[in-house]
Length: 292
Image 1: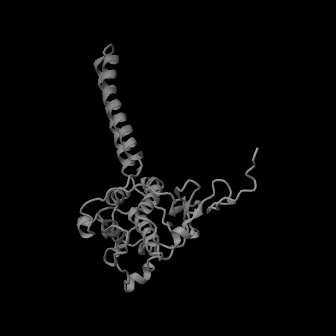
Image 2 (image 1 turned 180 degrees about the vertical axis):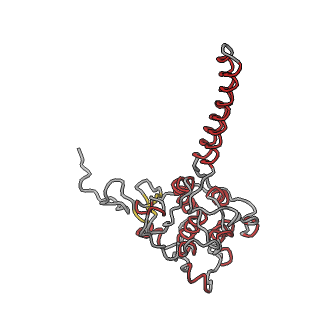
Image 3 (image 1 turned 90 degrees about the vertical axis):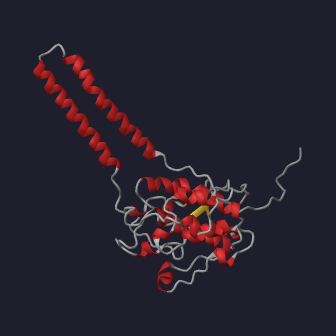
């Protein structure tokens, strides 16, 4: 029976790597040199959105997305590297990644430069810019002084749609309010599917169920208390009603609580004319995925 022991097989980027190893995008020649197909870039972003959305749902941000901190697995799926899986608030030694970190990561508690989902969106768009051009954008502090950024929609690298390039330009806007404000909005503009965090709606449903139960409790109390005197019945109804109102208020308060990293939308209002300004009047259809 013939043996394949002496056959030569092509060596992939994971040859000799440990199981479940992640290869950084910066260490893969096919991605670090630029010119990565648009459909492949969209697939990388689509892979990363669920992990980032989970952080945003907890009022946290990653603050560390870059070519070095995005890894590919053996099935050609993108993941955040373990070094940045924890929220930025839990990484005390975090240093802004030059070219990928927006200006707000270089400031501290600035009302003019708030941090939020748009912070990670800047980094995602910087990664996309690098995969298109082979070069990272200029560091944010340099852009703050004299911005040398040339919009990709104006430069017009070949093989990319104008809509796709305009979304990258919008995500790399210096001011937070000029970028897409949520991952859902970014995914919509790119025309990609994304499994966004569903925890918040579930929490709202739980609170609604609790409120309904609290409202139903007085009826049960009435039926049970009809056998007693009128005065104990009124006292029981009053106690149940107060308890239900307090429980409902507690849930409402906790569902509205936010983390200090995420600023109020009143500080950074969502960009009203993003699609028009960036030239994305229509969402391009998602391209078929290509193997990495």
